[in-house]
Image 1 (tube, rainbow, N blue to C red):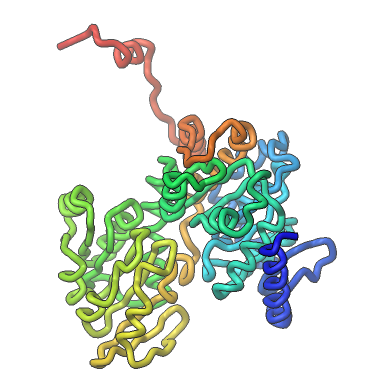
Image 2: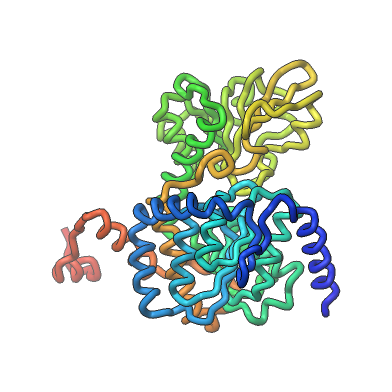
Length: 446
């Protein structure tokens, strides 16, 4: 047996013994799982049912999958936020014939009632609100399934395969990546020639990028901040770091609640776009001293760091909606502080050396998932429809693809959009033959 595999098995045993009394570990005969409390399953089933009613595209795909079984005998490993929306995705994959193992893609994003309900649906689930070591224990438990398809939100599953479980690669057909941060990591791997199997960038589908990222992140981030703090947004100076799709949605929703919104950027075109959209644009050094609330959603590290912490005013709130907890430099914040205390769930107060107070939300992790419920089901309907159809596509075409990061096929993107419009009762026009000819010719002039 490979040495790494032996060490991993020992780590599993140590962590499992340490948590035996606090977490429910495979007490149901014939099922493999570790969740917080199986007694929460009835509550989770209701949440999944509520979400399904808002996800008509995924449900339509599920109905077809149930009949056709396009995923029969396929093992799928998923590292995704364990939410009621994700539940409807993995149930759809199971109905298509797949065997599915699921862990969370962030230590604080699991909805414990959903995790319990999915165990009863026949999914191998390893998820609760974990610490760092427990998180990677769960990742490796999913990989013990020896998946043929990997589904990621942040690329931790793929990264672990490539760094620690390389023996699994030969049996993996391909993968899907859900979020901006993960796509950035995977493109870097592909550029360096170290990516060993094809991955579809779900994040870059128009039916994901333009809806989930903007409308989902905008609404759910404000939801998380409000649940954590219950502060009045109107009149606040609200700083949004970045003006990509996610940050654009946050800025839009903060302005809608009456905030004076400031955008910081590093890219001239995005900064100009933010200015013409009516936002104040300045550097973080200029914004930090006047900010009441700062939210980062850039996909990069150290957006708020030592030089900015030194300028923050008393009582400022810091939050992050980027995938990893590196956008706010927490070591810098701790080094600048004399003490910290937990004020309420998801709110920690740091006292700086000169007495200023800084409030960090959700430990610097995804505030929309750690302090709220994540994106609305309606937008995740399109994202997870893409996941479902791209999984089917990989099974059909994956062996023909070289290791690289691929766009979602345009026919899948269009199919998802058409199904969503259909579910909303919206009809659109079609080109006439004359219009098609006009657009493909050059003879007609002024």
